[in-house]
Amino acid sequence: TARLIDGKAFAAQLRGRVATAAAAFTEQAGRKPGLAVVLVGEDPASSVYVRSKGKATLAAGMESFEHRLSADVSEAELIALVDRLNADETVDGILVQLPLPKHIDERAVITRIDPDKDVDGFHPVNAGRLATGLDGLVPCTPLGCLMLLQDIHPHLAGLEAVVIGRSNIVGKPMAALLLQQSCTVTTVHSRTRDVMGHVRQADIVVAAVGIPGFVQPEWIKPGATVIDVGINRTGDGLVGDVDPRAVEVAGAITPVPGGVGPMTIAVLMRNTLVAAGRRAGIAVDPAL
Ligand code: NAD
Image: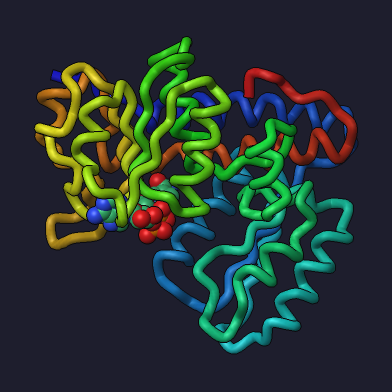
C-alpha cells in the first residue's frame, strides 16, 4: 500500500522555517512582514479561511491586517481599498478572499493588486512570469503540491505528469510548475476524450477536479505518486477527488484531509515573506 504523504507535518515544518526567516527579516528591516486579507460578505467557508490565515500570520511573527467589508460594498469601494493597500509600505502581501459577490468583477479587483504584493499569484502578470520562467509569486495550492512532490521525487525531470483540471487557481499553474521541473506534462479536463487513458501513463497524478472520488484506483499506474487537491464537502465529511481505494495501487498519496489542504496557508506565509524580502531588498532563506 501507498506511503501516505503527511502534508500536515510538512506544512508545520514550512511554517517553522518561515517564522525563523520572518524574525530575521524583522531584525534587518526594522518592521515585520505584513499581510492584508480582504473579506467581502459573510460566506461561512471564506470566514473560516480568513480567520485561519490571520492566525497563521501572527503565529509566523508577521503583521496581519484584516479588512471585512459588507456584502453590498461597491466594486469602486473595494478597488479603492486595494489602492490604499498597494500604497501602504507596511503591507507586503494582499489577498482578496474569493469568491466575491456577483455584482463585483473579480478580474477587475485581482488585476488592480500590485503584482509584487499578489501573494495568491492570481494576477495575470504573475501567471505570465510563471509561464515564462521569471521570478514572481506562484499560487499557493499548486506550489504546495510541488513541494510535496519534490520531497518524494528529488529529480522530477523526465517523469510523466498528468494534471486533472485546468483552473487558473490550481490546474494551470500546477502544469506550468511541473513543466518548469522538466516533467512531461499532460493536462486533462472536462472535454478530454480519454481521461483514464492519460492517467494510466502517469508517474505523477495531480487531481484538481472538484468531484468526490473521481479518480478510480484502476486508472492509476502501480507505484505512481498521487496528489489529491480536492476538498469536497459531502454527507460523509470532507473527501478528495481520488477514490480512497487508490491507496492500494499508488506508491505515495496525499490523504484528505491532512494532505494538500494544510500546505496552502503555509505557502501563503512563505509567499508573504518572499514578497516582503523582494520589496525591502532583503535576502530571505532560499530553502523557503
Ligand atoms: P474548478 O471547478 O475551477 O476546476 C475544476 C476542473 O476540473 C475544471 O478545469 C474542469 O475542466 C475539470 N473537470 C471537471 N469535470 C471533469 C471531468 N469529468 N474530467 C476531467 N476533468 C474535469 O476547481 P478548482 O478551483 O481547480 O478546485 C479543484 C478542487 O480542488 C476542488 O475540490 C477544490 O475545493 C479543491 N481546492 C483545494 C485547495 C486546497 O487544498 N487548499 C485549493 C483550491 C481548490
